[in-house]
Length: 95
Image (cartoon, rainbow, N blue to C red; front, side, top):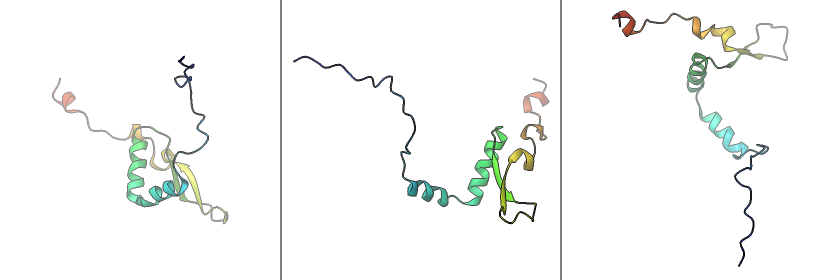
């Protein structure tokens, strides 16, 4: 018996069109996280210099259709690289 031509699975790249996890499962996982867990993950990402978006109450009370707005964490918490950092132990010991 002759072998057929093998498929080009090595070169195949998914378009990422459809989610691999159902919407109910994703929503269940998202709702199971507490506010403090989500805030801790946001703080970690902010400290790494990632672009983190926060949901805050809209300071403009005239926009009643937008009670909350999304703002960047750098606008609320400041620049993570400019915060005061403790000098490392090696620098203190003169190494």
